[in-house]
Amino acid sequence: MSPSSFKLKLATLLIVIALITQLLSIYISTLIDHIVHSDLYQYGLEFDYSWANLYWNNFHLLLASMAIATLLIAISTTLILIYIKTNKKSFKNATYVFSLATIGLNFFAVSIFTRVDYIIHNTLYNYGLQFNLDWATSYWAYTSLLLTLIGITSTLALIIPLPIYIATKHTVEKPKIPETKQTLTTIKTTKSKPIKIRKKPARNRHLQLTSYSLVAIGAVALFGAIYFTSSILAFIGLGLLFWGILFAYIRTEEYAKKALLDAIAYSQTTILNQIINDMDYKGNPIYLPPKYFTNPENTKAYIPKQNETALPTPEQIQKQETQTFTTNPTGILITPPGAEVTKLFEKTLDTNFAKIDLQYLRQNLPRLLIEEFEIAQNLEMEIENQKITIKITEAANNKLSGNQQHPAPLTTILSSAIACALAKATGNPITIEKQETSSESGETTIEYRIITEEAQIIP
Image (cartoon, rainbow, N blue to C red; front, top):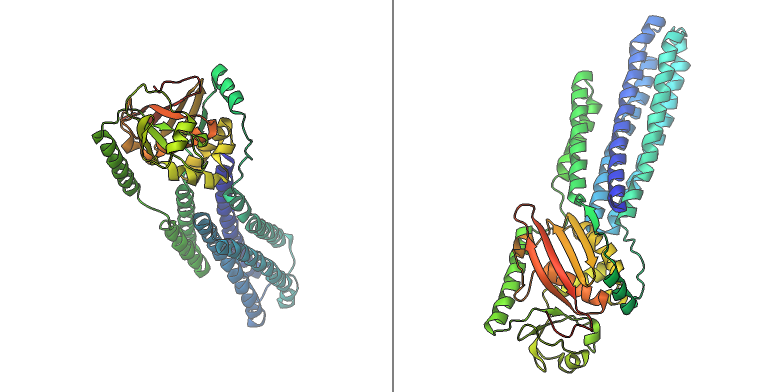
């Protein structure tokens, strides 16, 4: 489990616990009220409106403050989830305001309860109440439990925003400038174990979990309201049900249907492939690193006229980098479909892939695709010699991948973006040797090849 995934799950658990403890504190207060208006009459207490009105006013104020605090916890949960989706600081700041308001209301409830306690242990003795350990023991136990639950709720209200806030912070390792020759030597002699990040739930799943929790707790509160004939529990139950149903419909502004993204990606790649095939260019695309261009920000792929063509030198490409069709050697110099996605990867990680090594990319690519962009639920990356194998489960473009033993000529946007990133990180040209998708598991396997200086012929 990734650290940010753990923090989100921890925050969700704390929210559920806070709501449960707040509802339990309201329930315990009703038990105390039952002692006053039932048990104490058996120990000499005589009813009189002079003490009853004073007691009712303070007790109802106690219940109201705790009920409002419960609703504020639900509102704070909403603001936290919206902040995760929109990353707007106003929602984060409002979350802290509501959390502090919840703590303030609970402290106010404690002060009101001290007045209720004073009425029971002082005023009621003037109306015939006789002290007895039988009722006092139950009353003290409920009092201690009530104050403990209010304290737990207040503590949770203070710390609930912290794990979610930390989880939304991007903590990325600082890249180290690699030594290309040393990196390639290591790759030749070692076979790395694949990095796996297994099925990290999307953020919408955390939203659904919170929604289900609120609906369940709200339903319990409504049943309790019917059983105890309590209007306070009824209002709490309705409020929790409202927020639980609302959470089910919260979506980020950037939400778009996967089918729409698939259709757009498919049409762009298909048009490029058709143009290249009509011009009879048969070579596999070669994703070039920054050293092949005078402007290191350029990201382009070279498609030779024929297979098994000599690899062009950086000097040859630099002389023709502004041209689409090259003559020496003959080929096409094109911006690959995943170039802009690679720049988005760099922006998200706040780094330049040309200044990091392959190990850094191997460590951060799974988290990037699974947690940040949520376009994959499982990713494995294995490095052996000059071969890099990436396996992606349930990627956003799985339906577009197909079974391609030899991509002709351009592949999907995601595989193209990864190729661009690998070219920058290794400092060497990259080609895609094979891409295939399992019809049963939906897992896409992409095999990349690092073309070193020793390899003069393009495979």
